Amino acid sequence: MEHLYTKNDQEKKQLKTSPDKIRFLLNYSKSLHITKTGEMTFEGHLN
Amino acid sequence: MELQIKDSQLVRQYINGDERAIEMLIHRHNARLTGFIYSKVGDRELTEDIFQDTFMKVIRTLKRGAYNEEGKFLPWVMRIAHNLIIDHFRKNNRMPMYDGMESNHVFSLMGDEQLNAEKQLIKEQIDHDLARMIKQLPEDQQEVLQMRLYKDMSFKEISNNTGVSINTALGRMRYALINLRKLVEANSIVLTN
Image 1 (cartoon, rainbow over the protein chains, first blue to last red):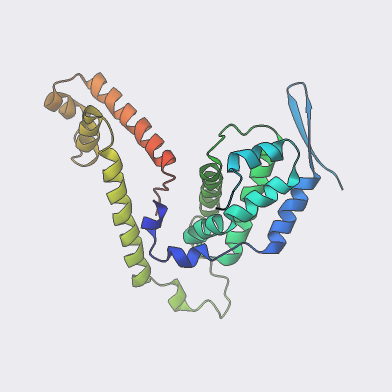
Image 2 (image 1 turned 120 degrees about the horizontal axis):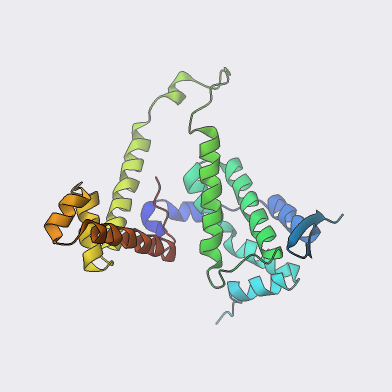
């Protein structure tokens, strides 16, 4: 339905976030470590 | 026929530790989400920053085991992006910054008729979609909503016109708004200009 809001939707669909940003996200995901202790959740990053 | 793993399955795989699953999800929705963000902010660099922040939030939520919208992955991601866009505009108060550079020509700060025309077009489309969604509500809720929003009637006037108590009219209005919100979410519609 969102295509109704814009006329140049096709043009926008061709835009993509750069491989660099995606690489960053994948590295972020791999390094993010979640530890749950009781009701507490801790976040940490592994190098 | 091309077989595609469902988003919900990829989400499950990712939660179970398969890092390739998040890569597939990011690539699958890259163009759609980037286009969505760009349509709101109109700046390439900012779009990529918001895209990145959106998926960082997605990754953290999934890894913390706090995701509970199985089957509705993309609308959920779009909602996160939408909230981050709103945060951005709130932070910047929608004010154009003038930093004294020559590149900031005075005409760039003046109104742009073309943009107003586009905004008008979007507003008309939103009004149209809203009217269509209102028609999907139960009749009693439609009636109260239309009287309140389009005829600007007070709840006392609505009560007199419909023959129900003010409390009932208020209740119908409340449920109309709750149901409308559900319809907006179900259709992944963003009612902002």
